[in-house]
Length: 268
Image 1 (cartoon, one colour):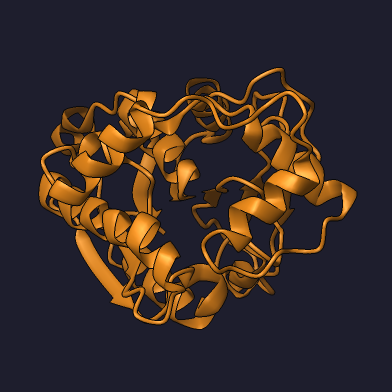
Image 2 (cartoon, one colour):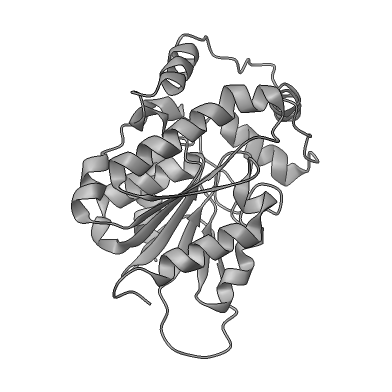
């Protein structure tokens, strides 16, 4: 592995033998093995293969960064792919995973996207287009006097979500998210992934039980992104109840990943 970021490595296999590792890339406000928003619920998958849970720069145990940037994160992911890995990304981490897969598709054995924030790859969808018009027309909402604790509270309460405990680790992740490069600046070369024949799985919640404001402003555009990427990449789309699939329904997500990885030709 050639990278400066921290990686949590889980490997609970009882026997020997080679198995292709799976590399996970997290969203905002979180880190790799976070039980609240991260991939703690995917630990049972380590019975089959090693899991590499990357902490993006400024998150978890990775070093600080002046500004989190999906392009830099994508380079970090490439440095962690080794001789090849299954790649999984959630939210903004899904955009990072897409960018990394486009750069080195030869090292990506498969690509699984959990509600990726790849809005710029789905601009032909009406709700996505409306969201992009709205956010691009806004002035920056993070003021000099905004604290991570206040930002965390307002970001969750404003859409009807519970506020996570404001631990120092959480607040550091929020502070990094406040400075993160806007995801709508990402230019995602889908053709490089499609042309390389990388198998793709897209996981998306149905959002029926989400708070109304969260569903309207976030969920419905994310559903359009999932559907658009499924069409563009010839992916398999798995829908399941809820709005945070890998934490709300970890057993279902894990089953979908196991089945997906098991069907990748020529890869253990």
